[in-house]
Structure formats: C-alpha cells, structure tokens
Amino acid sequence: MSPLERRWSPGYPVSFPLLLGLHRRGGGDPTHARGRDGAFWRTARTAQGPATLRLVPSDGDVEAAAWGPGAQWLLDRLPDWLGAADDIDGFRPHHRVLADGARRLGGPRVGRTGLVMEALIPAILEQKVTGGESRRGWAWLVRRYGDPAPGPAAGLVVFPGPQTWRSIPSWDWHRAGVGPQRSATCMRAAAVAARLEQVVEMTSDEADARLRSVPGIGAWTSAEVRARALGDPDAVSVGDAHVPRMITYALTGEVSDSDEQMLAALRPYEGHRFRVQRILERAGVATPRFGPKYAPHDFRRM
Image (cartoon, rainbow, N blue to C red; front, top):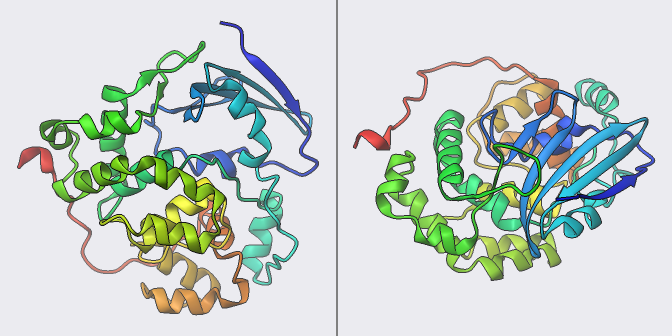
C-alpha cells in the first residue's frame, strides 16, 4: 500500500514531544510509536475511516506520510495537529519558570486533532485512578478491540469505533481493570458519539456543556477533551489530583492541592491556562509530597 505524502513548512518551531506527546497514553499505548529513525507514528479513526500517520522533522519542515481510508483527512489537518490554528500572540509568560519553559519549547503551541471520542474514552478511563491503572486498561482494551493499523506500522492499532465500545462485555471491562462507573460512562458516551463529535465546531463553552450533558463527564474530563480535540489553550485541568499542586507551587512557591488557589495563580494567564499547565508539565516541575500514597483498586481481583 503506497502512502499519501505531504511536506509542510510551519514557519515556527514545532515541538513534537509537546504536541504529540499530549495524546500518547504511556509508553505502552498501541496507537503511538517512536521509530528508531526519529519518526513519530500515530493511528486515528477519522471521519473517512482508519489511518496511520508518520511524521518526521526535516530542516524546519515536517514530512508526513499517511496510509488507509482516512489518510487524506489526516494530511489535510496536519497543520491543526501541530498548532497552526493556535493564537499565541496574547500569551505573556511573566514568571521565570514559564518564560524559560516557553523559550525551550519554542512557543509553545496547542494543537487540535478534531477527534473527540479518541480524546474522551481514555480521559474517562483516567478518572479517579492512577496513571498506571488507566494506561493498562487503555492498552488492553484497544489491543483487544481495535483494528490493525493500515500501512507498515507493525504492531500499531486503530482506536475502536463507537459501536465496538458499546459491544464490550462486562467481563472484559473487568479484565481491563475498569470499574463499573467508568465503563458505564464510556458506554453512555459511545451511544451519543455522533453528537459529541460535533463539539469541534462549537465554542469551548458550548462544547463543555454538551460534553457534560453525559452523566459521568465532569469539568476535568471535559477539559481533557477540549484541550486535545479542540486545541483549547485555556482548558486547565480543574479537579486533577496533581495539576493544582504543580501549578500553584511553580507560580507561587506555595504547596496546595486547592483548585481555587491554582486558578488564582493562573488569573494573569486567562485564555492560556492550559498552555501554562502544559509548559510546566514539560518543564518537569517537582513539588513536595505529603501524606499516604494512593492505593490502586485492582478491579480484576474483585
């Protein structure tokens, strides 16, 4: 199968780890890979069907190749994926940590995939569990129910479609370590997938309202989706177990898990609060930790 190809000149520095790493759910994510030659591989289930995308940075340009029925859809949207539609003119990183991080990252920009369900299902799986728990469940379900990736990307898998998510039996959710509350939310979202995919044409507030109309989808999950699928630079992760502490400590030096204190620290950056979050995440801000460690619930043993 011959690929479709495109060479694109962004005109600004592109941070592949920043833009593409946001969508990868751990090192075992079967929808992503990094080649020994430095290429970034990514599968997707587009409006035109499954596809595989290979991206290689080349002297400031981006060389892209895509396979499968959705190949042209992916190539047409490549600039959006890499942040071309993102307006960073109003962003002023006053804080030293932000300024240093933004300089190292070359911006940074927020990309938009236009793929709502591919951002939503893993976000639901991440609700109120550790990263390791959610990533194991995600990888297990996608490998079991996804489709082989088009083209030469051996071992990669394409995200299952909505009907497939709705068909997963209770015992396989259990085997994946996904509890009944999260699996039920995934099933409800899959049942209205077509309406949820429409949020890419809405404002962020409209998209938030429609996403949160599904029982089990709250502020945190909505923000995770809007950041990835819509490229919303202001979709900060309210309700996260770690983000408030990281942001508050980086910007104020105070140790707090309070969303209110995080939002107060972010007030000078309204309109760019997720951008700030992403810079600090990539900067590797270390925060003091107190209290007992979270003990994961292994639903597979219940």
